[in-house]
Image (cartoon, rainbow, N blue to C red; front, side, top):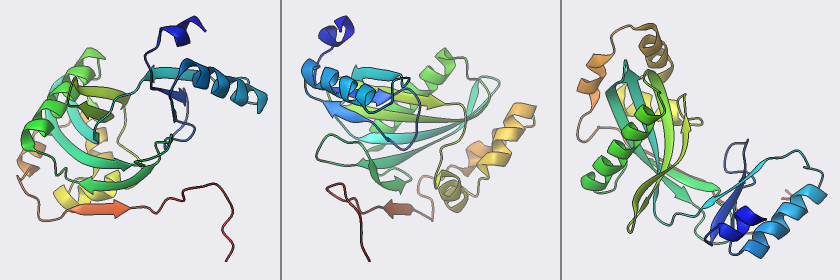
Length: 207
């Protein structure tokens, strides 16, 4: 309760384990946070560890880094679309490569590289989720020592001809991957766009 009282709201409440933004919600006050905590405990998820963190307003990005021996070999950004209303953060689409201003992309990429270095993640493919706030700049939401899930592998194959699984293994084994930097055209011939239709309410679809 003390940690909740010290938090600035709105904030984000989410499970420590999970994927696909499941169970991640925005809470507007300390009372909402405590009510949601009690609700989840009452629903039988007593062992679930919850994280309460700062809410960052602004566009969200998925960043893939290829690191080897502490050096950045490759970096790409994709735009992540999220639900624009309500309290949930379910993804609604992806655009790759990113369409935001190159200066914003450069700031986000630099921030992610610094975060990976600070965490000691020096080799392999890394996946980071970042939000960019106009007032405070980029903020890392999560870091994964693996490539991103879903269509991330496919989009990199289409746009850059990269097999991220092979690249990850080669980087970890010490095989040269520096040539990947040459695969970063300013405007790839292939752009990947994906979108999902989200229901505004819970329920069952009947065919």
